[in-house]
Length: 254
Image (cartoon, rainbow, N blue to C red; front, side):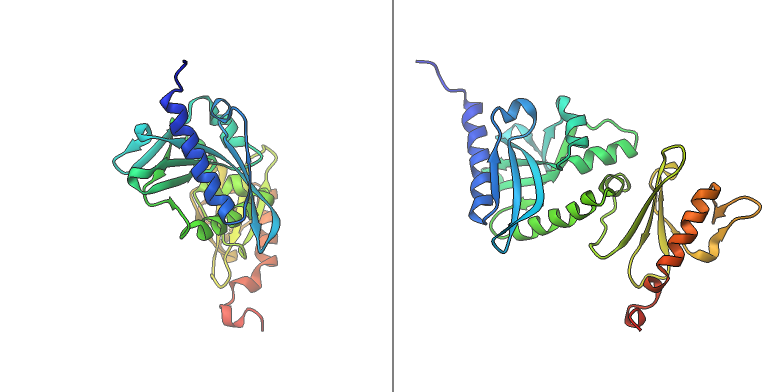
């Protein structure tokens, strides 16, 4: 009789554990045939208060000790890099390691985008040992992913990942693309006296800015950052439209 490979048993156990956890908490799980060949095993749609949301992710699920490192686990990217990075759904890597406590996860899409910003090629997705998925943490996991998807839906999630920034749901985030196709983001947090500029040309390093720093003559600049005229006018519009958000929080509604 033909033998069933051990890797298949371990892989099925991992997928079943992840699926059981999600379904136990009411989320919708669709298993993908041949997931190991295509880089995705599960499509998950989150449910809130018994109602289906518009928030979905894809998951690659791995099992066994082969992914272990001293600080957690690593999942090889292989030839899935561009698909995981540019997928219409964020792709998460989940590892099942019962000897270390069960399920662990990482956002593969986010790590791959950040690698592009750093001009690096990511060979493996790092799955931290602290990122545990179980009945106690599933709620916070779902909330964090739904917050992440807010910015995906608004079209700025890619730039947040490249800058390694986590926007809060009530932040003001205004994207802009100049004539050369280079993206910029104006980020204003409520009650902060300054905004943050994220710029492709600045390798996405956050730069604190405020309106008094903006100059149009002799050349458009904000602080030490050189702009073109369109970028400068866009920034001025951003400052004017968010002025009340830079007031102290207690006075913002007055």
